[in-house]
Length: 73
Image (cartoon, rainbow, N blue to C red):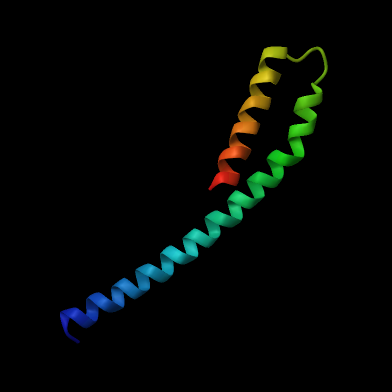
């Protein structure tokens, strides 16, 4: 097998592996978006008074930013 054929075979294999990894990451991203969407209402409504209000507000902001970024991608 020539170097060109060998390089092409490797490129084909690498491309397939990259596509599989991309699909796996998309599934993970989808699961993360679902989890964030599920917890966001709880955070927005606030947690018990024993929880630091500033932390709750920061958590809501982080979840909203994560959702906006993930939906943009």
